[in-house]
Length: 85
Image (cartoon, rainbow, N blue to C red; front, side, top):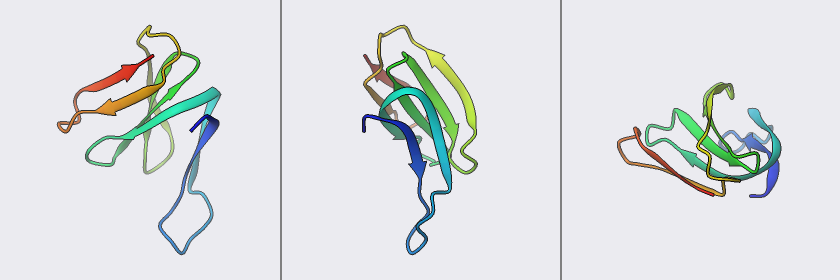
């Protein structure tokens, strides 16, 4: 990914982004929760952000102290996430 922002796009044929998820540094990875309601992003600022996928609003963020985060995955139960850095 390696971009500072994530654009949430609508289904075709619409082309305008619905939301822009802004990050202070390069964003490295994205993962949706299994229910599609939340979106997790990782950033080189060492934070994992959790966003509301419907509104694009930041729900919460975590510093899991793993250096610059480069990967994220969410378990099928939606209650557990793994982050690499």
